[in-house]
Image (cartoon, rainbow, N blue to C red; front, side, top):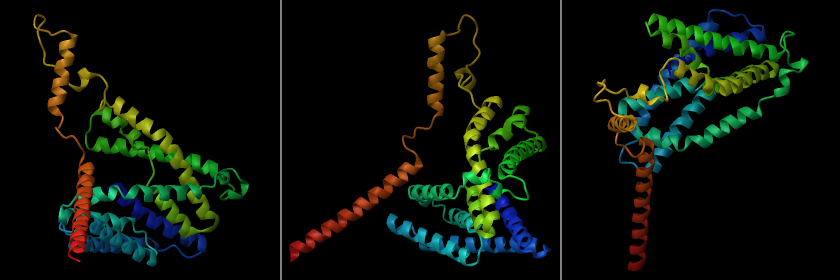
Length: 316
């Protein structure tokens, strides 16, 4: 999440300078310092909201109450940030960080994971609805006489080069193996989520043709990154020898002499047994357990209410 924090801070500074440039205002020291101070304030406010969440969400509360309280706190925080014209992304990260480190309650996040997919779907549908494909080639969409298509292509390749060079230098400083150093940058190509969110916020802040151009370039490049990104990430794992489909590379056998060497079937059985011993004996994931427990709690509460209703009817 550190890259997201840096991206949010850099975005705040860049959007302030961009707004000042488009409105004709002077770009001074305040254009750089003020966004940083605002984000630090949002971080502190998010931490306070995380403490509120810890105080209000107790383990004795039902799953429904925990979900309602957490959503109410998140929406109220986003409303305050919207009123202050500040992105709530950094503050929400601080809220979750403070809550998980002060309460140690991971079930809430697992339960929210079952609630978030429809919201994420609406977010991406809304972003796609704002994507004007014709703006890439229309002369009216050009910025300073440069077509958006050319700007998008340059951005696409410059980001890949930046990711690769940054990953290479980072691995070089930390003295990582050559395989990791040469191919780690390929695994960083996928882009979505925060970038699309910042593009939408930036388009709303800039407005007009500049906002449309910004969102169009980011959305178009994000589509391309998501098309080539997974393949590049998988290629990076293969080339760096971090992933293999060969069983002998995953589970090496002990060295044996020619007389005691097992045949192919025995080698396969031995490797399968080693893998089974290393795997955790866990039949369901933590998210599934959290969902099952929440469903069981809800069923027990409904059964108790039904029993009380029947007993009340019999008394009458």
